[in-house]
Image (cartoon, rainbow, N blue to C red; front, side, top):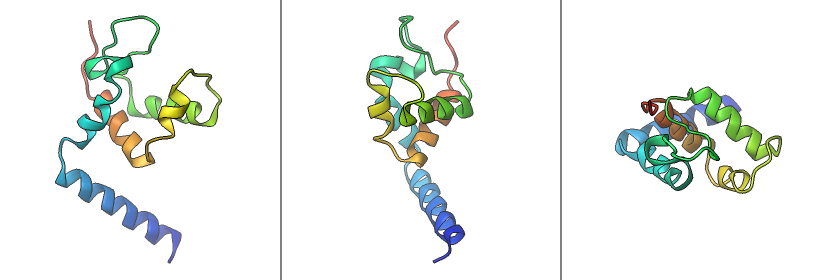
Length: 101
């Protein structure tokens, strides 16, 4: 099977799964609330807020954690536990949240 066809089928399957569960992105992002706060609005200063941060920036930061380029206590392990499509959903969800004032 051609790589482009495999990619297209994978994206179609992910889109189908998201269409079947409109709360999937929110549910995945909820696992981040312990450290990053509800809706990405963290209260402390030790953890980065995610609300309103562009999805591209969040994904770049996660890629740095996954590769080890960005040191972390736990994010490097957490980031490796999600598929690329799940991470994209999470990043898009946080990007759409309103940052705290």
